[in-house]
Amino acid sequence: MATVTRENIGLLNDKLTVSLSKEDYFSSFEQSLKKYAKTANIPGFRKGMVPAGLVKKMYGQSVFTDEVLRNVEKSLTDYLQKEQIDIFAQPLPLDVDARALDMNNPKDYAFAFEIGLKPSFEIDAKNINVTRYAVAVTDEMVNEEVDRLQTRHGKMTEPEEVTGDDNLLNVKFTESDKEGNAVEGGITKDNSLLVKYFAEKFRKNLIGKKNNDVVTFQLKKAFEEKELDFILSDLGLNKEEKKVADKYFTITITKVGLVNKAELNEELFVAVYPNKEIKTAEDFKAAVKAEIEAYYSAQSKNQVHDQIYHYLLDNVKMDFPESFLKRWLQTGGEKPKTQEEAEQEFPSFADQLRWTLISSKLIADNNIEVLPEDIKNFAKQQLFQYMGGQMLDENQSWVEDYANRMMQDKKFVEDSYHRISTEKMFAALETSVKAKEERISAEDFASKLHHHHH
Image 1 (cartoon, rainbow, N blue to C red):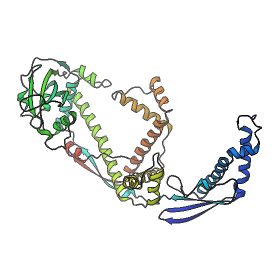
Image 2 (cartoon, one colour; image 1 turned 120 degrees about the vertical axis):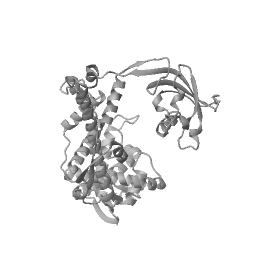
Image 3 (cartoon, rainbow, N blue to C red; image 1 turned 90 degrees about the vertical axis):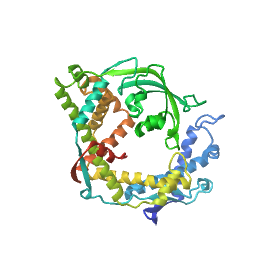
């Protein structure tokens, strides 16, 4: 019977040696060879009638090698399961050379493997302090959203000339000199812009313009910083490049448009909220305000999760078997990496690993489960989002059929399981952390948002 010995070779880094005697593998090798002889298809011989010596000569070495390595793998797997060793990835072989295996000279073999052990650590959620921001939704914010909805549901007209900030211009950008002469080989690009996207001091140059009129300008004088970044990107220019905003462009107006805003009446109310009974402008504004508040409430919740995430990542300390993991980075992926590449990737890889271990422990400690019904409901919610946020009857047969189809998609189920378990984990943590409430403006809240991955 094969034996496995274990010795420590570094921090959370052990060496396992699998020792095989000839008796551990030789009889199974001979049996495998006999089975192979019965199924071998060799020209000139009837199936199952190939001489054993020929089969051994042609295929014996590969069968021998496979049988020895199969025994090693089984012994290693059985040992890890019996000892319940929690390891990273898979054991990495140390100096294993299959060419040393010789069926004509069967003997005792020893195969060494390196394993990386997962660290033990503790998490105390009661020590986490967070701020739960309550965004003040102002009348101005409500009125801006109402105005946007009126514009969105309005009707486009084509007046003869530009009259104000709300005109929509279809234009063609052409890179030029200061006098408006096109630069040979320069940039040309079609775009659509509201007049109010231009810098306030520049807008007077557009008033009264009609189709086919041209205007020449320097980018930095025609646009403020925010809009300038968008325009530079759209034109394929690098905003980091020195003096890129000094470039001149000529725009040719190809169409002047103006949206006649929808009136604040029941036609608009039904178009925006088809499932609500809204009769008055006051009720409509109240519904808009509630929607804005719900949006910021969800964003505030996400921001609390972000604070928890960063606290855990920064404060839960754990050790790693670095040499093992770096070697695994070099050899464990689809494409081998150099030692330098593994060294460079390791810090971000370690952060991902740290979060995986933290979240897995929290999910286990909080007994979090994701049921098939959770994944099915998640599929339905995604469908409603694809449909523009409409609240459909989830019991309709076609909605149920869609959810059932998604339940057969392995990748969707795996991704959904991860997202749902993570959300449930954060919801559980929210009840444990110390949170203080703070009212804040939408502008200040926007500055606190971080893009995070977990």
